[in-house]
Image (tube, rainbow, N blue to C red):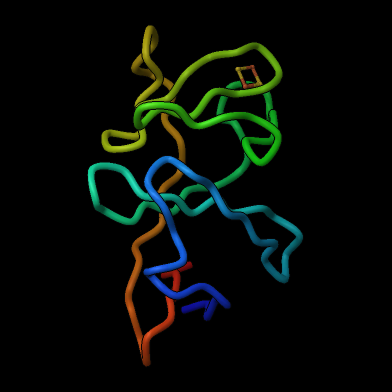
Length: 100
Ligand code: FES
């Protein structure tokens, strides 16, 4: 588990926050329909960085080719063979931890 600096209350609906793992990989955390969602910042298509994209109505938009991904299912809208990598979240001592 990776401990973050974020409390659940600090994550707003469709407003992303991000962090960098010790490996250098990026993670985006947001909230969709009230649920916290954490996913890899690396686009499964060609490696675009979702930290530079947008989240709108529960979908993450890649800044490179503008593909969109449903954050609940993780699937690309238009080509379900592509999925974002999601991480399980736990709240420990009031802060978000990621199962990585
Ligand atoms: S790199 Fe993300 S859509 Fe192509």
